[in-house]
View 1 (cartoon, rainbow, N blue to C red):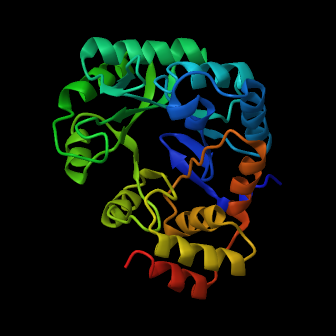
View 2 (cartoon, rainbow, N blue to C red; view 1 turned 60 degrees about the vertical axis):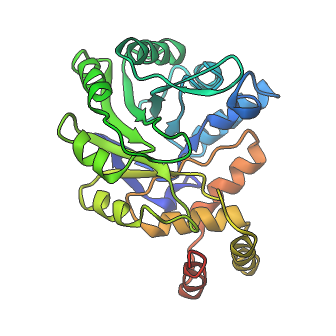
View 3 (spheres, rainbow, N blue to C red; view 1 turned 45 degrees about the horizontal axis):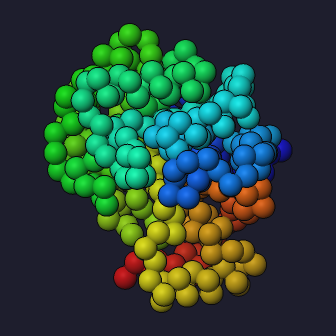
Length: 288
């Protein structure tokens, strides 16, 4: 039995994925820019993740740029039939490593073709449109035109499913009028729970929710509470944070990233942790 089996599965479009996946962002260099410090270790991390049952890999061709997709291709191609690779479009990188919106028809088409080429795929399983109205968090703005572009590429057979990232509830509702949305990727964790109502709404519709930054933005007091619970459970704070997310809702898919096989093993072990009621009660006080 794989080490992630106990976390269960969920549907991502028409594919069944294990709920504990892998995010490839950290395979690039510092600031998600340039080559990794240790390419051989990056390749080893990906291969070990898949060997341990991970079949949901999150990436983007603007990580590096191009770096993570090239490493994924080198490590895993030809891909197993059960592997689902999810990528993102809607942003680009400046030569100074800055993040820039890339929403034009030409930029989106180029991004899709770049992902196909660098991953060596004929069709992309899932493409998330990353909203860039505010790089720090969701902000209102129309996604109609870029979604229509992606829907057109879907009709051409280059994309199977479409998702959204860094978006509001209103944007999700509007997007559903243009194309089927199979997943939403926003910041969410034990301490930052603004998306609580959104997660429940998506769960009722069978739509996956993929939180990023599982330890992002914790205060010292919040971190202390998490660390105390982790110590009692003989786990790391990261493991408890991931376990809490898995228990929060069955439609949550996790994509913790790392460039270290040691950290990968710790992350995968989080799927075997069952938080007792008293730990959940204590952790629920973190958000308050």
